[in-house]
Length: 463
Ligand code: ASP
Image (cartoon, rainbow, N blue to C red; front, side, top):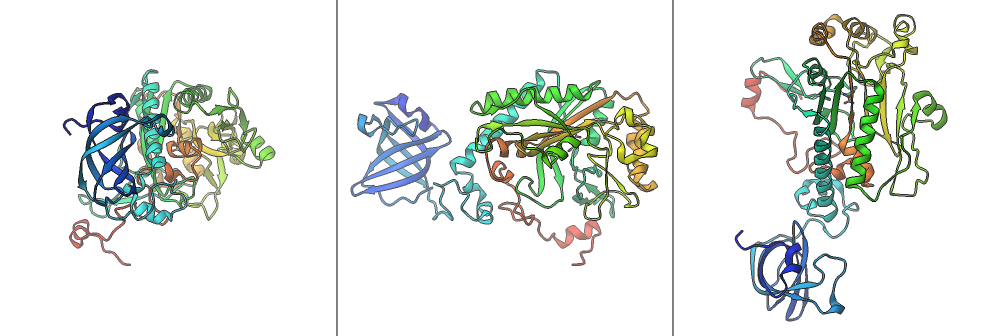
């Protein structure tokens, strides 16, 4: 808007007439004089008006006035514009606000989450939430620049695709052009990133959206989440762990300078030791659990390649084998244990690595199988039917054309930010997360489709 300045610039404009536009964060009526805290994307500034009508908080107003220095005893040190105030000459209500469904002055955690998500666009006006999303953006920018400087290229991979099992249920999308067939939303870009290695990119990453139909928890959003998906060729496990450690240490230093990483290099704990010593495969290695600024990263390695399949776990297999992949079915067995694949699969170690931060699993990855015979053997061991094997035939085919040994990792962005920002749930670092019963924020999906849509898809709904 012509002539508009931001609140953060007002201290530089003492003695000048300015125009501001933003939201009324608070109104304090003192008889003839009204104090208005005006908020825009850069902060707030106090405006002093005379003889104005009642203004509801969160209305959008445009203010013209004179920037004045406040007397020394009235300076507000808590805000960056605290030395000045605006003497209002003209005030126009651009868009009046109804009464807010909840207060914005608190951190919001005391408010029912369903209501916060219904009005998420208001909840995001809350300082803490706005700040979290800005930090999220800065984190992603940092990661992109850091990886680009090291020769990585970001490549987008399809969202409408075929199943890529990561241990959860798929979301299915019906096909109109091929009625009766369904796309699956990717649980991760795992297969595509491996195919990009066959394609010769060597260093790939993607800030990738992943879709998993699994029950929500505080540290796991329902439906979708974002991960930093990385894949590299001609590397061993050490290279992946070192690169990740360097990236996260540089990131913390730059974006979270108040945080202290308690140990470098990050400890590496074998899965066996983690279970025996800490009773968990995601040990919390903080020295002082009351210290909100301590970050204890560690690696958990030497996982078994397979776990026993349980009836409770959803697993994309025939259910005819006792084994399920511990990470996913593309994870390479430890080279020393290959001979055990036939004899004693439960004893085979996998080249899997989990990234743990303050007791949360914030990422996982592995060196991959790049030989068709071994991949095929793993399919057999997890009990794939011939039909299921055919679903992954493209991987075996790709592996026949000169495939570089490769591996990668995928740290979860939401979970990392939740831990580092000390938030109680991943939803606090996501703009529009779903509610715990799988309803989208604000828009209230899923919804009943139009009859015509269903007819075109040749789908009949039976419930
Ligand atoms: N695809 C894996 C996951 O989403 C990560 C990886 O193995 O790189 O957990």
